[in-house]
Length: 271
Image (cartoon, rainbow, N blue to C red; front, side, top):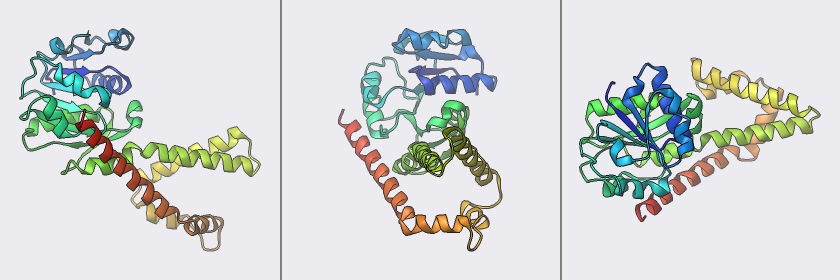
């Protein structure tokens, strides 16, 4: 991938993607970043990329334009983007902004890929789901995938509506694990551990469990069974979770997040 890329918006996610691209050997001279805040551009000034405060000028030679702005200003940014060509690929990483709105603000024939990354992408260990309509070429799909691979793993969904489920599972997902970590740390303290010890045990256990689930040959259900001895401590703890309906609560929580994602998409389309 050697085509010119312009990032509109130079916030944390854009900076992470740019850093990841540069680490893979992508030429800095082929990357342009724009932002209305000089402080954001200053952070990138030492990377050797081109920086600008003029969105329309910055996209003139770009094959790919990454839209890394807040959802609430996406319409304004696209409507004010002059010189945009239908064959230029727009890659949107804004949550809750549907394809229909992006086309309304650009053009009905615009090549667009929607992406749903999550916050671990800021450290290069995220996961991003992508969706592309039929008018996006295979080479453009590869370009979008290469860009988001710079922040972790990627996968494609075949239906745009599935991005609401993606938002519920992985987009909001880190917060669920942080919530559990908080509760385990507090519970460890209640059992007599000091804060530092409870935090270290919780975080390292979470990390180790994630590595086992990610790199091992067994799925999470099998891993759970393997560490649950009959009549043991783990079985007692899991029985309490089951009695409280924890699995159903998690299902309800994710369904609520997916519903809210759909609501935000509808609200975005009205802006």
